[in-house]
Amino acid sequence: MTVTANSAGTVKIGGELEVARIGFGAMRLTGQPGNWGPYPDHEHGIAVLRRAVELGVTLIDTAHAYGPGFNEALIADALHPYPDNLVITTKCGIAKVGPGLNYRDGRPKAVRAILEASLLQLRRDHVDLLQLHWVDQDTPIEETVGTMHDLVREGKVRHIGISNVTLDEFNRARGAAPIASVQNRYSLADLTHDPIVDACTEAGIVFFPYGPLGADASRHGAPLASASGRLAGAAALKHCTPAQLALAWLLARSPIILPIPGTTSRHHLEENVAAGTIRLTADEVAALAD
Image (cartoon, rainbow, N blue to C red; front, side):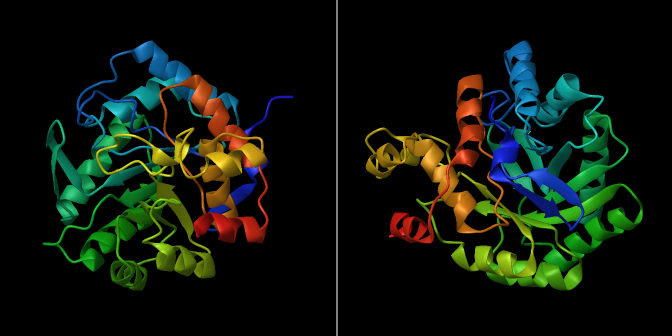
């Protein structure tokens, strides 16, 4: 029997969008380096995205800055018309001007412009979940999030989230509008945002941990997936790969965590989804974090 993403259980975004707790981060399906331009093997990218859906993945994470726009367009080429249960989350707040070159822009008019561009590329009349990619230090987060909430009222967005935030920014955003998700770097290799995970758990806000295998900001290497890394021995005892154990730990860490591992390999995609079958005890969760 094929293992599907539902093996990890489900979680509700904004209390209504029920999705499997293993998602797919589509960022790597762009031109490299610097997430600039289209993915060079269009048909392979389509095949990876379709395989994700075949495996029961019901959440795909993208951003207009990936390309810019090319990643969203690839998702549309692969999956439009979309399955009824598929949630696509994209992001605003970043203007991409070259390979690896971007600047933050949380002004209301920029948020609206990026959303319209995303709707065009995704071939949709609304976005399920619009996340603020980075906080623009020249624009109060309350103003940016307030504009995003206006888009909810206008029917162009169903729910809003925030990304790359501090605990203070998280609290300020929640004071400005209902927040359905947070997306920060988080893994067994980087527990900096433990307080935000705890706050999301208490509030029932979905947390997307990016870099779940410990890849650094430049995306070079994934230390938690190494066959000779810190998880190798424990993974052998659980009869899984180190990468699968890293994902299983995230799933066990909190019921609101929804990992979104990205890959260009259908084999790795299948391995990632299978991580949802691994169960860890509370003692194992604590020991792995030591």
